[in-house]
Length: 242
Ligand SMILES: [Zn+2]
Image 1 (cartoon, rainbow, N blue to C red):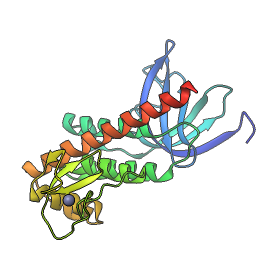
Image 2: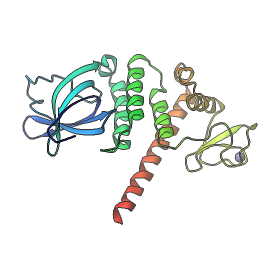
Image 3: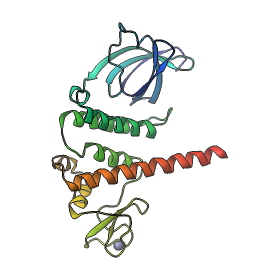
């Protein structure tokens, strides 16, 4: 496509930052172009034509103009309001954790429509459900998408299937039996939840009320995502040196 063309995309606003006196840079996740950094001109003026449509979590239909360095937002229409998320500080914090993770996983110039679909789905779920597992489930799903799908049906080290799985180790990549155990101890309830989330029974997991087991899953998921991102950041640094 030649420079200067107009194009339309759906997008989620991942984050924004100030540019000059009145403008903002908007970082978007789109299904067709991956992560896009664009300028929204005049967006910080009180009478901006964009209103509040270009805030983090906004799910929009957007029209952009291909600029020389950065694309320019020319139109934005709301697809999802996410009113419940925006009215609740706890949900805003949980949405932010997902936006930040998607932002770090998405690379500019790399199209990843499934990451986009997962993020929109998770934001919609967060808007309509009080499940404590929305964010952890999103983390496990994106890790699986990245190729890091933990082994949760058998011991990841010895392969034993008909034994109790009692620990989770992020380095080993899954659950472990009593003889192989290392990493973090996990309860039988947390093992069951992990198997639901990664075994195609996400809705069953989302119906489970808050409990010590949902907290365990939350901690494990956060740790696994941080571990994955850190390892990837390190590998990028190593590549850059060559
Ligand atoms: Zn084992």
